[in-house]
Image 1 (cartoon, one colour):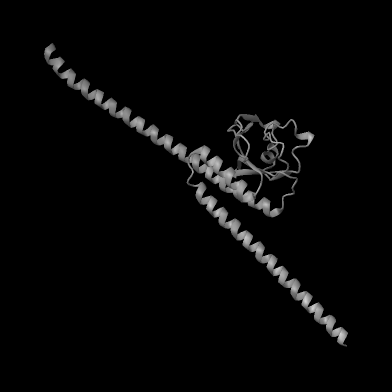
Image 2: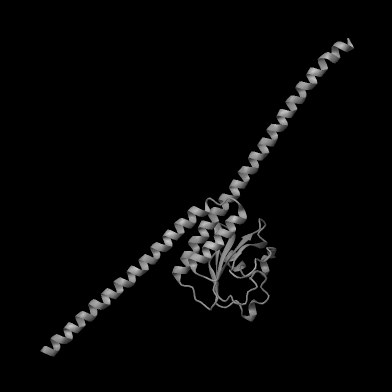
Length: 234
């Protein structure tokens, strides 16, 4: 009887210890989610203030790399025609900033995220099959890749990509986090474009107003000159 009671007590203590550990793990997870949410809110507030395009692109890649704790982050933008992509920004500490030419979509690895409109990942981009891919950063230390399309009103306007320096399998939490960052980036990008259009429209209106004023002034001057000339002619 004593042995059974002792065993039952051990089982009870084991169950309680397991429950405590589970609660501690859940608490850590919730704290991590809270930090991520706070970071996302801060990033979102920061992005809406960035109206200069290149400053916005660099902020997106820098913040995405930091919050995902990855080796590098790149932002690719689709051309209006949809047949090319451009490396708008690359945040890769210790590496020089590469030029940003446009690449044909058919030769780009991020094309798979654009065509499927879904996140895609590749375990090792240093494999031989990726040698002919033109849009990847020329950094041999990069390994795994997760690409997320930037969607706005059902259209893909770009791709946000993170890279790790070791072979890594991205979990669902990491994918959801990058998806949230891509959504914030898409909204901020459209906001910047709309601001640029409004600024151009205002500049055009000011120019038209100036031309109208000059026209009226010229007409008034011509009228003032015509009157004395008519008198002289008479």
